[in-house]
Length: 401
Image (cartoon, rainbow, N blue to C red; front, side, top):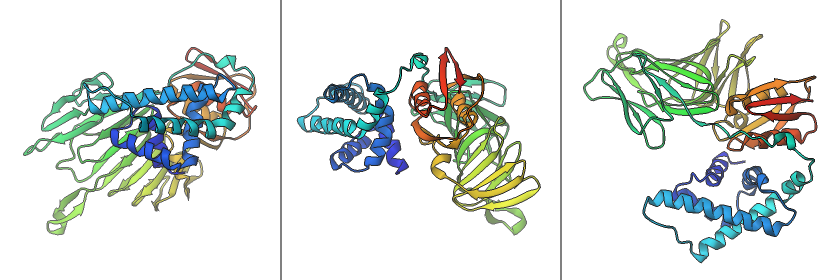
């Protein structure tokens, strides 16, 4: 499946499309293309609408929902004074979307509607979102979720700014050397956040993660950051003078340090999963090249490969890129995972306590679910295997066989 299209459809269903993106979605609806992507996104997000065996009633409900989504999207994009007036042509496109929903989702809807009562999942918990705390070198803490857009702080020659999309950006004032004292950004359970470092590198932090980095890389010979948890890196290429090579230019290394490994890159895209409660540390290369040092061994990764650090030392395997980047692209993807691994991911993203009662299922669980869904939808899908059962009590999920 096309991850870019999946992400676009997920944004559409969550009222996050720009005007241009909305036009693209509606064009794809008319073309009838990317049906497998529609099926994945729409059946996951539309299953909650099931309350009747009558598809006609469902169609009306879906059309109403899509109208609301488009109304919000265009009003937001056209800003603040224009009221949307839907044309006949646009309503035809909306109706077409409803037909796709009902057609592609029919099997799933039937499957869900035929299931036994899921009363233990009546209580529900919303998914995580953009939440983080920024700690400056002087110890000042800024709750980024609540902070207003604009300049947040100035540290020497470095300015920290929050943009309209929530992104945090570091910039060095012209003529200033900057300040290399460490800053820290930390996401809680149920949080994720995107930060642009002083060198232009982008880092997306997953839930329950911590990144420590200099407020400026100026006058440094390397860019060194420390990570706890999981993050996706897009490292910018930075050229510097090499005094030892008669003022020739060379690329400034970017080094990520975790508790079990050190990754050295020059400019590339990669994902690191290094949670303390996970048995393995995994570094997956998307593009470029990285050097992984761990357990007294060095390995160079090529795109599509994964470095795994565990009890057996450092090994290199083929990566399932879709599974690795699922969190970044807005969904869970479980690939023959044991229930403990599945519930660790759910616990981090929904900020819940997980309690196991009795024997734990030994089966491997697989499937994909939108991370924008409430927790009950994720649990329902797992529960359909008849291998595991869940009960929600406030912010606690009880797992039984």
